[in-house]
Image (cartoon, rainbow, N blue to C red; front, side, top):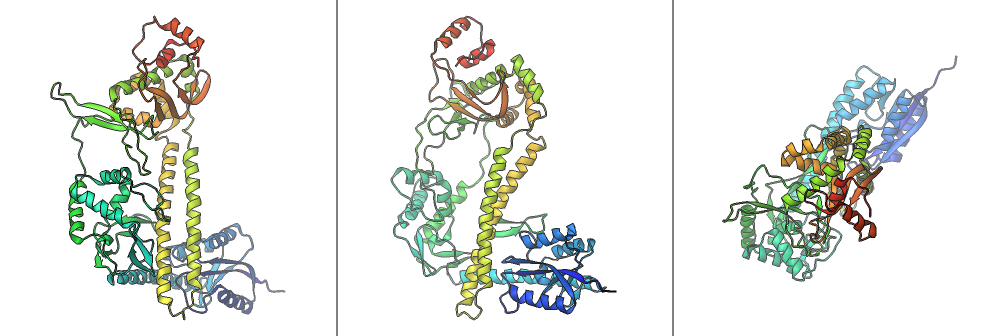
Length: 579
C-alpha cells in the first residue's frame, strides 16, 4: 500500500532586526524546501512576508492568508514549516494563539533550525519558552536603538527628522536658516516683552507682513497659535537638544496598541548648534507660559451654556461662532451673553471683518421657535412617526474613515520600504551603524504617524458605533421632536445645547439683522427631516420679493403672531411656503 504523503505550508519572513547571512527569504526557503524533501513532504503552498516586524501578526497579510487557508481546509496540510520560531513571531501571546488555532484544525508547527515540532510532547512547551525569549529579544533591540538615539542627544547632535523652523540641515547638523530666523526672534520678543499671549503673537505676525516659509513639514501659510506654542516650548532655540519630549507608549488595557504621549519632564543636553535666543529669554518665556497655562474656571453662571456655539456660522468668513460674555454692568448688574466670530486672524492670515456681537437669548429663542413651528405642523408629525427606527446617517464619518485608512496605507507603505532598506543594508558598510540608526529613527517616526492616524480612525469609529447604538440616534431625535415644546422648554441649557448639536449641523446667517428682526438665512440639519411632504437636509429662510410673497404677507399681516422673523410667521400660519 502506497504511503500517504504529508502536505505542508512554508512560511518565511524578514524583519528589520535581522541583518546577518542565512536569514534572507531565499536562504529560508532553500532550507525549508530541503527539509520538506528530506522528510518526504509535499509543499502545498508558500507564504512570505517581506519587511514586516515580528512585533505582532497585524499587517502580515501572507501570515493571515495562511491562517485563513488552514481554517478553510484548503489544501489539507498537516504542518507549517518555518526556519526559526522568531520568523513565526516574536510576541509570545500571538505565537501561542496562532499555534492553538492551527492545532484546532489539525496542523502543527515545525521550526527547522530550532529543531522544534509542536506535535511532539515537549514541542509546545519549548515554543512557549522560546516565543517569550523572542519577545524579550525584540524589546532589547528597540531599547538598544533608543539608547543610541539618547546617546546622540547627549552628544548634542540632532537626532534626525525635519529641522525645526528657524534652522536647516547641513550634513545632518542644525544650521541657522537666515530666511526663517527673524520670525523666531520676533516670537520670543513679543511674548516676553508685551502682554500678548500665544494667540496674540500669531495675530501680530499675520497682521504685520511676516511670511512663513512653506516646507515639507510646515504647509500652512499663516502663523497659528499652535505654531507659536511649538516654538516657545522647544529648547532647541536656546542651543539645547531635548530627548524624549514625546514617547510612544503602550495603551493601557491593550496588548500591542501604542500611542504618542507628551512628556512633562525630559532630559535636555547642551547642543552643538548655534542658539537663536538666550537662555535668559527662554527662562522668561517659560515663566510666562506657566502663568498662562493654568485652566481657567468658569466664573460666571455655571448653569449657562452657549446653546448654538459652533453651530452658528459667521456670515463673513464661514467659520463657527462661539459664546462670549459681557460682565455685569454697574447699572443693572446683569451679565450678558453673545455669539461672536473669534477668527479675527486665522492661521492662513485671513482677517474676518464681522465685528458684531449677537445677543444669545434673542437668537436662541428664534431658532427654537422655528423648530417648534416646523414640528407642530400635522404633516410633519405624521411623517416623523413613520421615520421612527431610522438611524442618523454616518456616511460622512465613514468617508473620513476611508480617507484616513488610505493615509494609513501610505504610511505603512513607507514603513515597509524602510524595513526593506534596513534588511538589505550591508553590514560591512563603513557607515553601517549611522545608517541603521538613521533608518531606525525614520522607522520609529512612521510608528508615531501610524499611532496618530489609528487614533483618529478609532475616534471616528467610536462615534459611528455610538450613533448606531442610539447614543445620538434618529429614534431619540425623532421622539424628542414629537414632544419638542414640552421637553425642550423644561431642559437645562446644557441639554438644549446637546439637542441642537445632535439635530442641526449648521446655521447660516445674514451679515446684518433684517428689518423683520431675522438673523437666520439657512438651517442645515444633521439628517433629513420631513417638510411639506419632502425630506430635506436644508431649510432656507430667505425669500424673494415676488408677487406671491407680497400677496401672502398681506394675507397674514393681521394675524396675531409671536415676535420673530417672517419665515417663522409663514410656518406658524400653516400656509404653503412660497419662494
